[in-house]
Amino acid sequence: MALWAVHGNGRQPPDGVDVATDERLSWPLTVGMGVQHLFALFGATVLVPRLTGLPVSTTLLASGAGTLLFLVLTRNRVPACLGASLAFVVPLGAAAERSGAGPSALVGGIVMVGLLVTAVGVAVKALGVRLLETAMPPVVTGGVVVLVGFGMAGHSVDSFESGPTSAAVTMAVILLLALTGRGLLVRGCVLIGIGAGWLHAALSGALPAARVAELHGAAWIGPPELLTPQLHLSVAPFVVPLVIVVVAHQAGIVKAVAAASGRELDGSVGDALIGGGLATTLSGSVGGSGLIGYAENTGVLALTRVYSTAACLVAALTAMSLAFSPKLTALLDTVPLGVVGAASMVLLGTVVLIGVRIWTHARVDFTDPLNLAVVGTTLVAGAGDLTLTVGDVRLDGLVWGPLVLVLLHPMLSALAGRVRSSPDR
Image 1 (tube, rainbow, N blue to C red):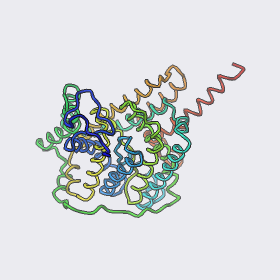
Image 2: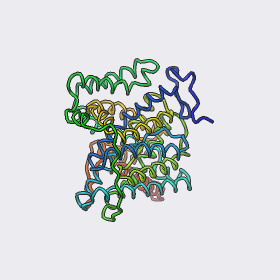
Image 3: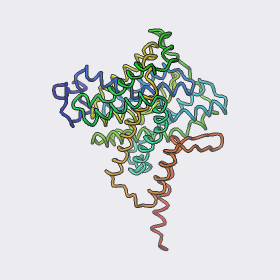
Image 4: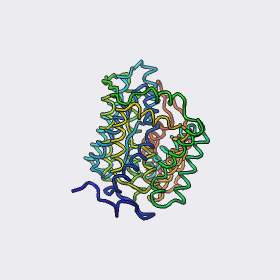
């Protein structure tokens, strides 16, 4: 039995019609959709290892392999592409600076996080999704999704401003096609927009000179650099808080995909956590960055309405192929930051609205002072990237925001319930 049924004639679905998870378009079009996903995750998946001192090619290899593992463990039900998580950047940097951890110790910390996330996934799968929903009711889940979108917005805006003209071309093309295009122009609007911005930058001489030089000097074929992880307890205090963050992000991505596609995916949350945890473990074991389902790829799904996991498969295989070709990796790396930032702004905006849809669908009561105080304050502080320092651990908004939502909201909710039920009131 085929994994994917061909949607219609496989060429052009009617406007407004979704291509389901277990469907696909023709393979040439599916390849195009997969490349679109690859562009959505490529920027940060290259940036994160650069910021943490880990090999880029290894992270690309792990991203592709981790996505394949995720698709298998979720039984082809959750369309997602896994890439390097920005949430790991500050904790790994702090571990390197304050404990003297080298690259092997840092990837050992990534392995720790992956194993602990996997354990949480096993518990959720064994005890039921209600275990997670107790800590992450819709008000928290929606908040995490919104916070992921807002938390990465600053990086997208900074990238946009680094090359505003090409970025404006990219955003204009994406929005124009999304709003007025038909058929494949809508479904491929992100890829076409990035291509237009990239072409504008090339014609105007705005491609990054250093990256063009790297492209000329790169070899066509070359193996990725592998690292052997070492487990050091000194790294644990810096990375263990990431477990809750990764769990919240991964569960939020599943909820976001469910909200966007109109499918019930609660039964897949445990599988998604196991898949994401093992993917991160695999990545760390070879020297790659910590992995997470990408909000930008969720935005691609919602914007194009192509939820086919076949496109995610193509993106994964392409990422793995790039890991063995420094020349092709360097070619894609010539896409200006402004172009990537413009596309990310559109996609992250879509993700924020998906979080709002989760709240709307669950009829979250925002007249409740608890929701207003905890969720509202956390979103503003997290979106502003307020940085907190706890002992030797430095947490940015993308890290501590989900921590506060997941830990503080249920505690205050229980306290408020006791106060309201008190006979003295």
